[in-house]
Image (cartoon, rainbow, N blue to C red; front, side):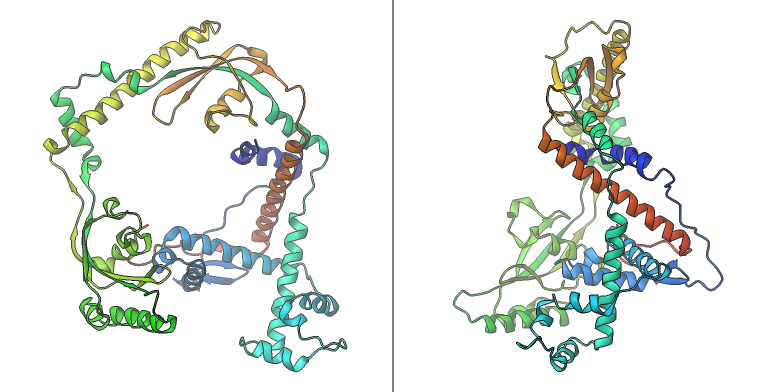
Length: 486
């Protein structure tokens, strides 16, 4: 039942903004730059730039942290998310300084004492082993001042975020209004006009099919594919773990250092060079889901520019515990348009569906116009059902929004909605009611979600205000990494 709240967050946020932050508005970031801006500068916050190198380095670290590869780290959407995160961090740092926040030494000590590694440095008599404390930090390359200043800053940021995002609704009435909106039920009947019902009415000529084929050649392409050869290094259950790790290091080093061939690694480690043909960007289903050529990371690396153009070995990829793979491209086959004679059946199928969709839409439009004049005509409509935002049955968000937008004072009424398959469905709404009793648990859960959305709105408003104070400027747009298509 709570899925509906998540699906309609925009509606809730608009309502909440009216009650909570009526003056809130999202301001665009100025795109003007001055004479001293550099090509590598992306965004300036209080005069200090976030550079493309900083984004790239952070993207690489985050991709490695979550088990991703360099391909992911270089993708534009991933790098954009990293840039957004860096901008938010800079804004929070600016806010901490601008608001002159501080953390007392006593509170810092109390907080640090909760860290297990530091808590263990307290002796039975309650005294603190400062020598071991300094040594602990030195082991991770930090001085006491560096560590404590970073922790002090983190605490201030946490307190700032908590205080800004700690939003309580102005009163319980707002929560009740929103919950009532989600509980309100409407009785609905559906009348569907689908393309499949009208395909039999379509009889395309050869000329029409040829014209459709010529106008939509992209739809009838054989996708690009590659022939590859690859090596698989598997751990022997009887083999010592240390010995296998040494083999894995050899495997990775040889395939990388001698990237023009897999043979050196195969000879050294007594492995067989295997092959696969016709591998696409999504792998090759006929090989099985656990096949190396269906591993997303392996396939992405093979379709990288260097692997495609220079036929170099890809870096070794661990596709499962104890299994490493390296591979190289033997042949690359670009996408090509298939001859009409080879795809004529598919051309006819696609043309017929589109033509049937058009006929269905015309039939739905004719019936819709008639129902505007006589909404009491229920001929052809399905059995009536009660729906609400809490209980949407099989309705998707756009359909439910159209039904709920009907004026209760003007029933019965009919609305039209386009289906995901291109067809049209008419919905006849004839009654509105409130359920006899509300579910207290559902209302409580919805109230929590509403408060969370309100907190998000407040935090967004706060960051937007900080953008203005910090004079945030976009200097250069974030561009795709070289050699990567996004």
